[in-house]
Structures are given as C-alpha cells and as structure tokens.
Amino acid sequence: MSRAFTSEEYEQKEVPIVIPPKIEEAPDHDIVMKYSNGRSLEDPKLPYEIGMGFLKGEGEFFQSDELGIKWLERSVKMGYTPAMVSLAELFLKDTKTYGFRRPAKLLKQASDLGSADAKSYIDMSSVDDPSTKKAYTVYRLNGELGDISACMALAEGFEKGYYGKDKARAAATWYIRAFKLGDEGASKKALALHYKKKAVLTEDELALLRKQ
Image (cartoon, rainbow, N blue to C red; front, side):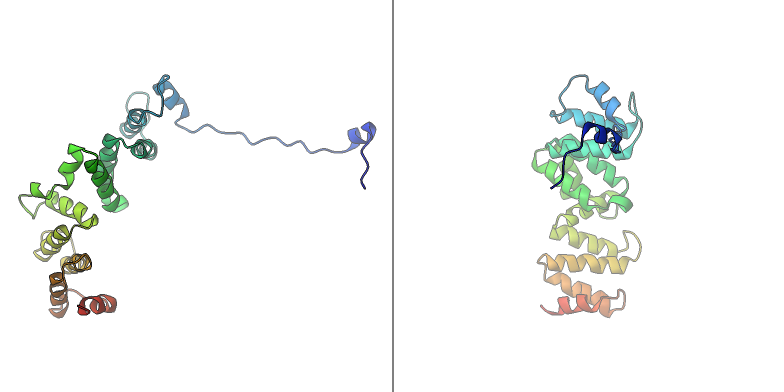
C-alpha cells in the first residue's frame, strides 16, 4: 500500500507541468463572426451568403474555394436550394475534378424541392441540338441520375462523333449502362461496336451483354 507524501516530499517531487495545446481559430472565424453580426447560423441563408462570399472573394471575404464549398455544403444540409444550385454550378465548371455525379444529385435534390433554376439544368426537353455542349451536359447529368433515355442519347451522340475523345468506347460504355438500367436493345448496339472492332469490350462486359 502506497503512503501519502509529506508536504516536504511533495515539494521536492518533480511534477510535470502540462501546457494545453494552443487552439487555433479557423481561418474564417473572424470574418464569419463579423459578417454574421448577430444573425443565427441556423438560418440557411447566412451560410449560403458566407459561402458565396468566399467563392467570389468580395467585400470582407478573401477568395477560397475550399471555404466557399464548406459553407455552401452547410447550407445544403439545411435544405437551401440556392446553395444546392450554386454548388452544382461550381462543380460543373471543373468536372475533371468533381465529375458529374455530385452536381447531378444536387440539381435533382433542388429540383425536387421546387427550384426552377435546378430544373432548367436537367430538363431534357430543353435540348434542341444534340451535338452541342449544352446537350451533352443535360444528357450527362441525367445519365448519372439513371435515366435510360439520357444514357442512350449519350451513347448515340458519342457514336456520331459529337462528344469528346475515344468516341466508340464511350458510346459502348453508355449503351452498357442503358442495358443495365433495363434497355435490352442497348446490348446489341454495344456488341455491334465490339464486333465491328470500333470498341474493345472487356470479358466481363461481353459476358454481361451475352446473357440476355
């Protein structure tokens, strides 16, 4: 059983001094507090305004895509449709980094909540010329959302040479996706590209398409 130290022994005993680590404030803390000016961050419009402020780098905000996305995502979680549309627009400006799936989901969510701006991005009836960049974007967004007609439109567009590089392989990819979603006729079109040696399909893809 250990004994208690006497006061003299305790004074002589080396007791390590633990200094708590310094808590650094987030780089956006002061700006957010100043801009908020007493407004509640529970109001989804406020984090949206903050996010847009950082994206544009205007007024008291410095430019930062990272912080802009952070605050827009906070507003999105609160169901604010302008934030969903703005975030989707940001992602669509750099699809090499963000892809199409994230903006597609954001626009679908906003559209379902009644946003006319979001609906205009994914409205396939708005496409007049399938060879345009706008057409590709509309079809691609809907293709990511699992729309069979959009997948077929993309496949046919690639096969006709409207979009991008490695057109035959891309066409086959979208035909296969349409087939997986339920269009049985799409398998024949994908296989035709393979047999004509326009696109090389993998063994797994061939096995899948030949099952029907």
